[in-house]
Image (cartoon, rainbow, N blue to C red):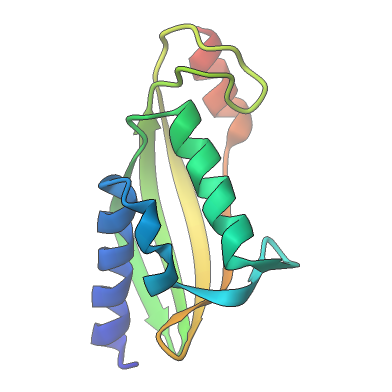
Length: 130
């Protein structure tokens, strides 16, 4: 995929996440992937995303910056939401969060084969406890 194709692909992925259309993950994630450095399956990634959206039904990913280098995509996003279930070990309080996420993906044959991200979980927890 060209750099422009990868940018379009990634924006479609974010749009799918924000629409909570997780039944479409097979369009984006390969059957077998590396997920946070460990071997995993698309089903496991789907389950993790489902659990996140169940805990935070208004979870929103805002793409702030995107870089493409060959088959690697790096993104900086702003994540927002208000948990209705326990999230990262914090019971729901009605408080919302806004944090920055850094994500790195590798794409092969038009789907992610490597997915990982990093965010400041402590800041998120502090916001939820406020």
